Image 1: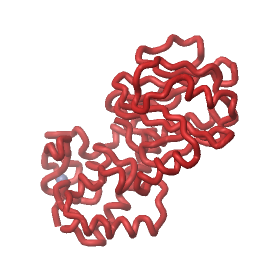
Image 2: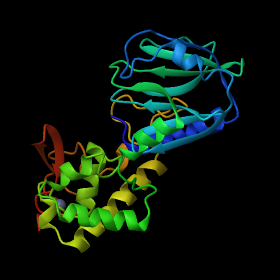
Image 3: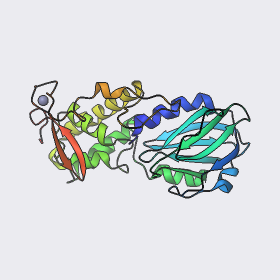
Length: 275
Ligand SMILES: [Zn+2]
C-alpha cells in the first residue's frame, strides 16, 4: 500500500514529464473506481496545460489551467505512470490519455480498484485537502506543536494515532512501525502515557523516517512503482517491518509481530517501551 513517501516519489517522477503538457483523448475502462467518474468528466481537462503537481499525505493532485484539478488516490494497488504509446496496455488499466498528441501516454492501473481519479474545482480540492492532517514531510513548527498536545490528550494507542490520516498525513503500516522503533516507543502505548518531549521526539523521528524513504524512492514490498515504473529500494533499510523473528539491530532480541487494529505491527520487546 503506497504511503506518503511512495506518493511523493511518484509526484516527483511525474512532475518533469507532465508540467506544461496537456491531456488528449482521455479513455477510461468504464469500470467503477471510488468516485466513478467517466470519460465525460475527464474530457473537461482536455487541452488544458498542467500547471503543478501537489501532494498531502497519500492524496496527490494535478492542477490544470482554468482552476481544475485531478485528484489521484492510489488506494491499495493503484499506479499512475507515463509510458510510450507503443507499449502494450497492462491489464487493469482504467485510464489513458495522450500527452500533447506525442509519443507518451499517462496511464492509471489499479487491479483492486480502491484507488480513484476525480476531477474537481478549486473549492472541492481544498475541502479534500482540509480533511487530511499535517504532513511530516512539510509540516510547520506550530502544526507539530499542536499535534504533540493532541496526541498527549488521546487515550488511543500511539500506533492507531499515527495511522489516522486526519491526525497526520501519509503514515501507513510500514512507517508507523519504523517511526515507533526509531523513537523506542511500544506500539501499544497510549498517547496519554507519553510525555510531551517523547511525543515531540517521535514526531521528529516520523519525519526523518519518511524523508529517508523518499531518498530511497519509496518502499517496494508488493507492486509499488514510481511514476517512471521503477521499484523503490527502501525495504533494504527498514529496522522492524516484516523482520519477524530476525534479530533487532540494536539489542539482538528477535523482532516480534503483533496484530493491532487488524494490521500487523512489528516491534522490539526490549527496545520499545510504553512509558
Ligand atoms: Zn531491540
